[in-house]
Image 1 (cartoon, rainbow, N blue to C red):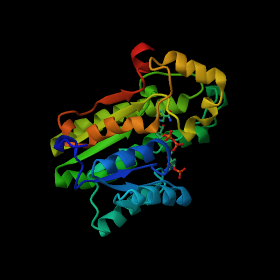
Image 2: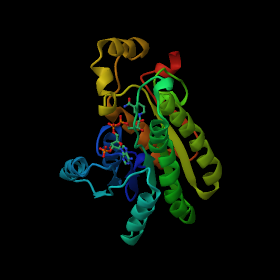
Image 3: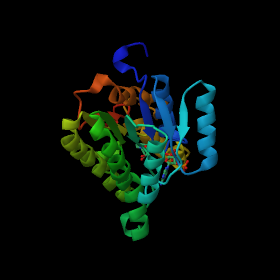
Length: 255
Ligand code: NDP
């Protein structure tokens, strides 16, 4: 990316859930735009693999393994970064899980797990990042919502509730932090080719439903989120706040 408007040189980006999938692709995109990236996840082997791949490309990579649902672990991770003199300029709240079943079959434990991983995590990690961004007077927060931040589908009720919450949490962050030079926006991916959708892509009926309902007639590739992520992480978006950008092959335009 040659335009200085989109350059992330000198910036540090923490991307939660970046050991694989969309987070890994976003971290790669931000690194390509010049950022130092802090990778996160739980599985140590997957994290090490992602870090090795990015370092092999010559990018500046740090690793912080922590559970985004665990307040003590989140706080401790930011304290480690503080101690190492690492200031997070860009936070991408991406870590998430999905469980699929009818509402009447969900247990309360499953409900909490989905809400905590997809929504509470963005509050927790966002709070720790903002506590440090506010005194510096600048920062970019990008929350990964979903097409389902705005539309419901059967069998994913807690996920849809969490992603709907992400949209309003993003607006709340923007409302509170804009005066401190922080922009908080969200990305709403459509149906993307990642581990999360493995069971769906291999189901011919679901596969043809996605292709039939998406104007682009295909699933999205993880790297196709990078343009929106770089835009929202860079000074090109300094007057964009509290928005959700859907990257979904046009699906939300026609639902
Ligand atoms: P994947 O299942 O491929 O990857 C999930 C990532 O989140 C992994 O890096 C995983 O780490 C990490 N993670 C999960 N739980 C935790 C936790 N408690 N603490 C820290 N890290 C955790 O998912 P996707 O890449 O598909 O999804 C990424 C985000 O995008 C999610 O928020 C998802 O809801 C959203 N999204 C995805 C869509 C899609 O079609 N794929 C569509 C719309 C939104 P580990 O490897 O250690 O398990």
